[in-house]
Image (cartoon, rainbow, N blue to C red; front, side, top):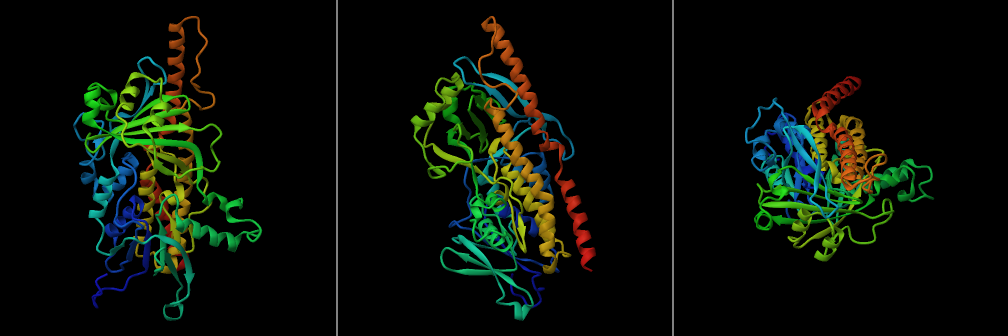
Length: 487
């Protein structure tokens, strides 16, 4: 805020904890829809020394493009993206089904067999996360002040200004020993969210009858605030596009602009181009039998060796061998999720993005769901009818609309992941089929794989058959009811 005497006082002070895609989108939404007669003071607290991002690629699907159009950043983002199209852009309301995800059986020495293409309106769109972050940062509103090197430890509710203002406030506590005050806190601080931990610590102590005897981590309700290891690890590295062309200029990962799954029993590889084809993003998933729900014994992110990557996919098809010949500086990620979180708002504090629904990457939907959270919540808070006394009610509306939907995406991401690794009950399981000849065996395998592809297509349909606009319509209806009940 510029402190001008003629400027209206802020409706409330909002702290956004985390400067990732979720937090940035929330700030951009608030700026885009801000009522200048009733402004919001926005302070963003980022743990790092600058606004940056972790990970390389991000997928953007039809639901999320709707948000980007509404925020006025569609064209900027599209110019950064790699799309599976014929080069002709469609008008905003015009759709054509195109390949968005390619499934290929690869865990054998013979040439890989492409058995299904997930078809999505206007196909797939992938980009480097850093490109998206850059666009969002450029559109941060003047009302947003970014504070870097501010790693939150916890927050507490205080009454330090209650006598003067007639309201309580929250105090944010940072690792450097400093504090800040806010009227509203939005935790966009990722899967290891300290905002979520503080919210659930407080709720457990206040609301759970056995809180003194049972730690929050063991409470039947509150244990869901602790991230769960999926039993899967992922090896990641980038392959320079030129390097891949030197190895095999006809490689499918170069020719097909959509994400591709090179699938095998208990493991699979995802690859797709980013940065206008300058790199191929390569992710190799390995599922540890019996690992789900156990405690991961190492750091969640660490350097990996080339030998480990190669060993996990030895004996696979030639295209996989060619990609493995390009391994450089791989990293190993332990894939954790936030599963079945019972609530995402408490008082005037709410969670968005991975802080509330960190999911497996199998839909490429984590970033999109974070953006949708931020958009719905941003529209709610930007509405001048959402006064400070109504914020807690507005946050509950956000929770009612977004939490059940996001939880369903988390569940279905786990289901589709089983399909990618031939572990889905009742579908192709990767084992040799009984047949009188090798030719008959291959034909039977292809038939089972087609069944698997059809089942995967069904699970993907939420990406375009459900609409963000419908969620906002219900959100607005509930806001009107809230306003009417409090008049």
